[in-house]
Image 1 (cartoon, helix red, strand yellow):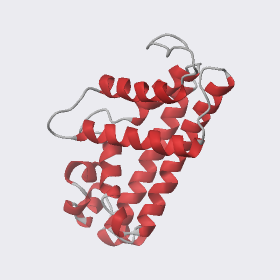
Image 2 (cartoon, one colour):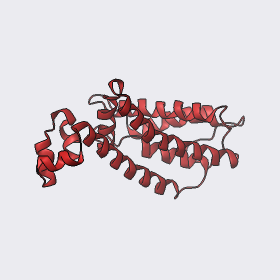
Image 3 (spheres, helix red, strand yellow):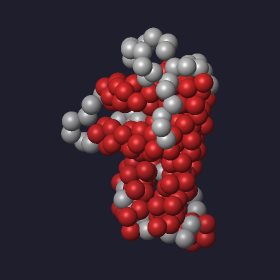
Length: 190
């Protein structure tokens, strides 16, 4: 993972991966069929860690709006060198040309959308949110928004703060999920 985030998978040599892992190149290739396979397994491993951390963080807050804000904070990259997001970007670059990679990424992303749907369902049950007309459409649309905001954070030039990106995502969420009453303000339990 460190090598991929430092230089990108295309620049990494299997020999260097093997050296860092204290293995031979043959041993590495015994377990992985290609550098792409290494990339995807590194992404799956890191994404699992991120989901565990996110779920633990969500369990520490109550209420739909605070949970949604926390989810957004965990989802977005910490900065342009965020290892999880570098792995995602490397893998996404391969998906237009590889159906198996696309399917693999969809399976990983589905877990995030399921967690988002669970937050919204709990918020609806508590009366904090209005149920979206179609939950699948909402989670697809909202994670696409978060992905786009993440790309803004990953750029090497102008980088909006994470706080600003969370505010933008919350504004969109309020527009879609707030009951007819006035939209809640940041920091207030809704």
